[in-house]
Amino acid sequence: MGRIILLIIVQFMFVASSVLGQTREYDLSEFELPDLRRPTLDLDFQFSGNSDRDNFRDYYSMDNRSSNSHGLEINADYNFYLNTDKKQYNTNITLDLSSGISVNKEDSEKIYENKKFNSRLSLDRVNRYYYQEGRFYEINANIGYFYQWDKNLEYKDRRYAFSGSIPLKIGLGRLEYVTDARHAMYIFDELADEGRLSEKPDKAEIEEFANLIARLKNKRFFDSRIRRIEELKGLDSALVAGGFTDQTDARYFTTLNDYWVYGGRPERQSGTRYSLAFIPGYYLSGFKRNPETDTTDAQTIDEERRAYSLNAGVQYERRKPVNRYWQNDITVYGFVGIYNAREQQDEGENESKLPNLNVTYSQSWGYYPNTRTSMNLAYSLKYARIFDKADEENNISSANRSGFRGGLSFGVHYYISPKLRLNVSGNLSYYWHDPEDNDYMMLSNQIGTIDRFNPTKFYWRDWDLKDRLGSHYNVSLKYSLF
Image (cartoon, rainbow, N blue to C red):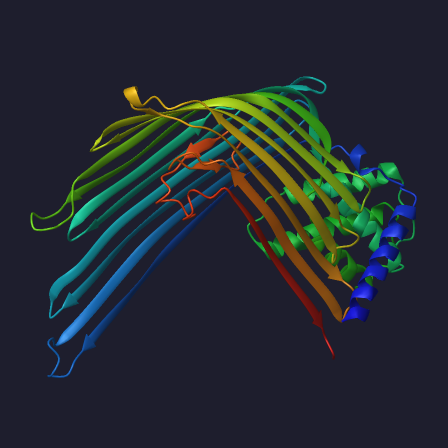
């Protein structure tokens, strides 16, 4: 085992040193994505069910038992992406509908029945307009809606939730995807290694081939096999017409197919973007329960929660392809805001006011020497502060506390040889906050959002926990003898 680890270290140092020692012939950060416009819409319908009927011997208290259940699901997913010199749009709309019915009977008498209906709608829209070179403003939208209806023999439940925010931003800089340029370099490099590249491409030819890759990926096909045929035809035509190859044999086509399928990962970006953001938000959720019979123990429930949030802050995003093999990304957020919620329950109304501060810093490194090997290391630091005091006289709850979360994650997928492969992943996390009472502060991944949860409903039982240190790792080494 020690020799294997030593071999891994030596090979990694050799590859890394050879990479850093290479002359960088093409700078990925210089690539500019061509004008693209791509809408897609996918629909999915599923209908399922099962039915059972059991007959019993005479000494059972029943003669037969039956169960039936049926369900219907409908899913729609719409995506739209646009990239030009003046605009960057990204839209995602998803709609999920599902319904079902389940019935159990004993001796033809209904003992259980459940009918349910679920619906979920989400819309995320980014509208970035460049009114001058390197200067932009954004008018974005994030909307989510959920509704659930559930009925059985004892009671009927309804749950609903709505969330909406309109992020408004103004800033400097631009982020561009450079994945297609790296994809083009993979294909040229591998054809050269296989002796199937007759001419070395220059900078302009690499960019032209990368633009072709972007256009091929942008085409919409409804049959994956036809898509693959058309894509390989387009690549082959460009390589032959450009004079880059004169040996279009089996080795050429298998190499081209392999690196076309696997050479476009992972997604990589280049550039820097600074933003000033102003984000108003509104949230609504409710739960209603009505008994279906007078004999049931179920109680009538009518609860509703309305909340308003207003956050303002700065965002910094830097994406740097150090070279064709290394990627370094940094993201910094800093927000101040107010979160105001009113909860209406059977016992009365409760109000919460939470002025807050939220700061996040994250950084990641990626190493991608080839399509089979990748290494990633990332860490993040987040600090949150709620600064207010509860007003018990007016039934207004709040808090005055701080919280911190730090995390470190890593992953290695190392293709040592065709017989030996190593996979390592893990994470280390630390959480701390200063609890004062039964309120609980949740440090959400969502920018600028701080919420309070009833500790009995939260997934951490230790609601008065001051800190927690956790870790997870997984190591696998696969060796093929023959």
